[in-house]
Length: 73
Image (cartoon, rainbow, N blue to C red):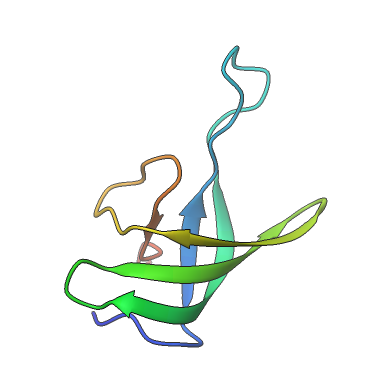
């Protein structure tokens, strides 16, 4: 698929170094596309505690600090 503004994706949260909080997927919306071929985008990430904005790279597999397409079910 092709990243574009408004698409819903997963952002993989970092978690904590000592494992108190796991690295989990969070819902995010693409707000800007910087490099379509490499998949670098800006996202608005929705957390239980609020939202934040970040510029992140794409990873086919869930990887902390990256975005990926949600699984199809």
